[in-house]
Length: 414
Length: 153
Image (tube, rainbow over all chains, first blue to last red; front, side, top):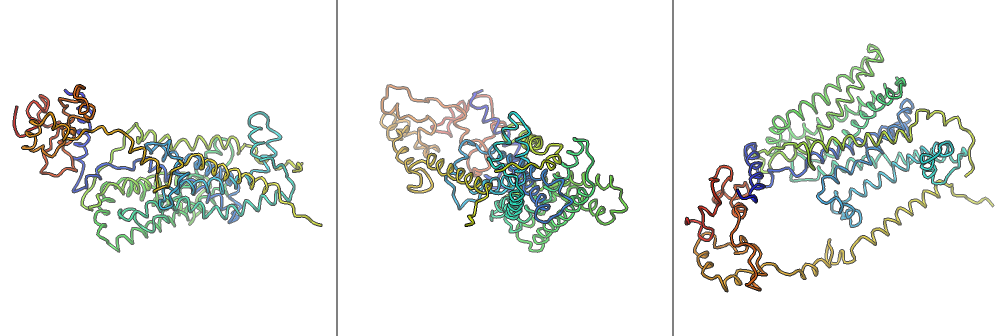
């Protein structure tokens, strides 16, 4: 056989497989999905960043004192995940080495082209600045105490400001609060923008929806808090420490109310779609009940939303009847389910939006590969990577004896 | 007189901001090609560069100078709209100097399948085959004659 024929025969085999799994009528360019699993991972990670930051802001802006033990952990979580947030996009690109061009020749008419600036603003003007103000005092103390590379890192990070006078510390505190106030709309912007990218696509009825940024923001808040709930318990377990019950109860409370709002907003979206009953509603209903049945109705709705709502609701309605260990177990397990549900939600938005034809008369199919640029191995790797980065950040900036630094009282003059 | 002293944190942060923004400005100046934006959202010089590339296609008129009898056959059959080089490959060097070998005298099955492999995007009246289902005993040219596709060899 002609060897040049082999790739063509392979392609024909794939096309044949695809053709047998296509239902109804699809336009030729709709057979294959252009946005695959990496584009599912990307909004998931940015959502966790925004959510973890909102969680931290509860302490700083809304003065929820009980959450103080998780304040720093939440900020570091946001940073660890933010560092990894652009990676799924870079892996998705055919020419990642050209990605810097989006920063040097930005086109304001493209929301995707503006991502670099939204990212840079959030990373540098909000998160790093807030972390610096929060940590400056400790950085000075650690830079004196630690030797070697670690000590050098702390010294560099102080930026040479070694003033620990009460006035300087007060200024840190005030700056931190102002940055958090700016940070909340920025976190909303970061994730609202991801929703905006989908919501502004008018041609796709599954995406083109003004509620999309709001839905993304609330699901981000829910997933961020859920991640902190899981991480806090794991961190306590790892360090053989007792979970702060009041703190964990408050996290559970915020998780419940955030989930309730998220559920309401997404329910409102469906209610609106069903009542308005535009011409696309028939295909969307088939999509929800057919190709997205498992990920939308089973994982996202039942396991990721309704079950945690009932379980967390019980801890809010009848807390006195549930022992502390049982409540904590409910928070933890609900958080794990919510994290899976939000990942399924990203899948449903990204993949679901490409499964039906713009003709509204047919469906294509998507098969997730194992290896390769768009395989699930890489996707899992990209979800695991932020946890590794977070581990390093916790090792550097959240030592077991954080309290010890508070006893140091010799301020060095700036 | 009571002088206002800028707190050291603010001074360092302002300096750091200036360094970051300044580095961005310098990087932008160095990395953006000089002709960028001259005509639109692309490198203006790219047009001149593309215009300078040497053409690789000769065009059917050049083929007609020596192979007119084949072109006349082709013109009577279904492949009349195709250019010679669609199947035989870019042949500028051969047209300029007939002593050099043309890139492809015979073509591979993949050349036929480029147009005739069954595909959703092709209209139903267009002849298409699924290479898995279609006869696989020989090359396409074993049964079909490219210049007069309805005839058999």
